Image 1 (tube, one colour):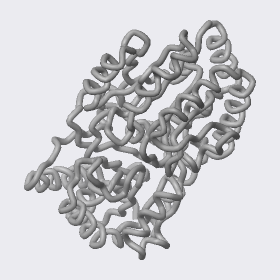
Image 2 (image 1 turned 180 degrees about the horizontal axis):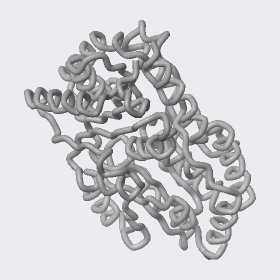
Image 3 (image 1 turned 30 degrees about the horizontal axis):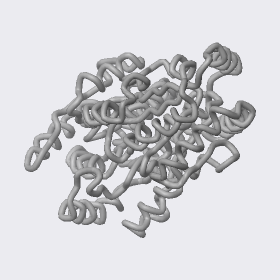
Length: 387
């Protein structure tokens, strides 16, 4: 039964307890906020962050109303109890119908808070590694605790949404009874118009040199050092090439130091995060993704939507999107020689690059539009409150 009797809207509180920078999850939350039917749904964003100002600025610049944003301090150890009580008060005050959590830590916090708040439906989204590991700074003891917590709470979730088939398999492997309640809903993005594509192509054509770029949160699992280490070999073949690394995060100082050590600082631009995707795409010719693992990467989908040829590591999540030689090039993970060779080929062979870009755009139009995702999410929300 919907609590919001006054306006008859379903109120969803999206909860991410570790939104420590701008990345795929924050951009996904913004897309959902911007595209859900406002006459039927209220979508509030609650998050914990050690980059509060950066994340808040991203959401506000993207059109989120300040009154729809709720930031809480990062909880450590016993401090998670005050966080749970603060969330409980938020859920009650805002008459939450659904708590939609993102990642396992949020599942645990959201479950405890919702159970103390009354009858609230729980929905979970899995967008990256389900059971956190040492790459996320989680040792084996903590990993075991997360596993036990998952076994205890998973059955209370109305649905668990995995953004890729690989992540669905991971959820089920951790909790087999979730097989029937775990579904795949691919991330959706806004599709640029044909006019925008023409404008981007025109801007790219004015340069006399190729620009190779990547965009990601600066964290260890994105393996951005691989992108930087491949640059010297690319420059040997294409001396005029220039490079962009867009994003932010805890690894930025390390990456800048590596660029200096490799002697490539003068040809690598650290771009920061961007809201104007079209402008960014006008500035690049080839998009590279060096992640060790992915869910359904928004940055990759956005590059494909603008007909950018893509070179990426052949890892779960990515290989559900890229067909090698069809709409992009997949190379063996962490093989820098093959990575630089593939990028060089795309830079030199303009017809091949155009073919990859065209096929990539066609895929995104058919399978990864934001309307497709939002339609599925809205049906899920409606069925949850009427269950």
